[in-house]
Length: 432
Image (cartoon, rainbow, N blue to C red; front, side):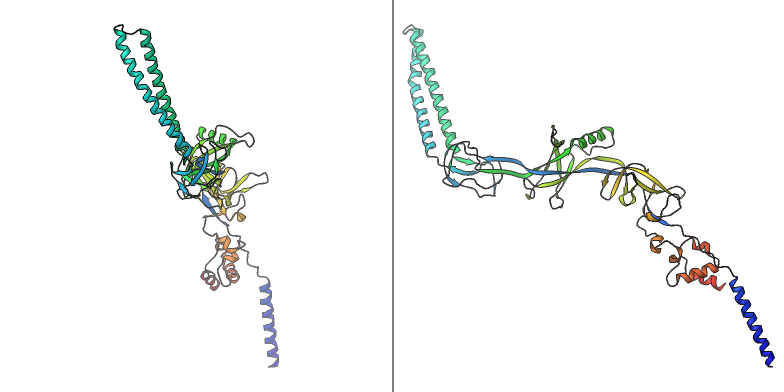
């Protein structure tokens, strides 16, 4: 009995060793191949784009009038509030009118005297005209009477002119606003002595609605723009180009302006040309002298090619490059010619055509000449969810390593190429 137990123990040990040996000889499961990386692409389509240029500039008043007295005297009154809006013709200052009133009265009296002296001379000439016809008086006497009439009439006209000059000077004692606008501070006060046409203005009036915005553009850019318009690359947006404004604090001015004209002279020191634009300013937000940036409309490109800036990089030579998915689903590098940035996109002049698929997401997983799986831009590629892009991280939640091990034992390496597999499939394969 004891010998039989020994025999059974030896047989069990031999069977265990055989199973261990057979287990060591079993080949390890094959490692599944790497999954095809997914990339987000943008399909290039031609667009109608309005090209703009941002230029620095300064605001200036639409009209500026410096108020100066046209007669001398003492300021009796100041009839406006500093910083207020005034109307054209409104009285601003009153100069002492006493001497000018006296001069006016004297001129009016001189006119009356001249008119009174004219009457008897004219009557005498009329009588001599009748008498000379019958030879009652000599022709010499008649000529002298006619000349006296003309001299008296000239005296009357001179008196009238003197009266008008005196009236004008008297009116000038009321200093009025030449234009409507906002008046600044007063340089004189009541009791100040002023002189006619003095160099220092009494006050300054500025019309602030609308306002001018003068911007500077380099002459080279202006020539390039004219050549683009002449060649047909750009199309004019209309008779008057629209202009937008960015204020000093970076905010956008809500109202649009128009470009009036471009100066005919180039500044030799800066090589720039002044462009004048006009903006409405109903709330007086724009004040003269403010620094602003004007966005001018250069023209319109009917079939522009735009690509996101994140899809464009630079090579060692500084050329713009992009990765494109070719017809066979493989990555192709392209050298681009870009002209300007429009928001977060580049305007491409050469290197792309409509229908090209430009890679903008997952560029780090795309290698030239390798196949990729295309997804629309914005959809998160599977490679981004998997981290390193390996299938082990894509197998599902829970125990992804164990599931892939089961899938490999069940012969599902082909399915591992397609990305993540449902947990039910490896489990079924393990049961088989």
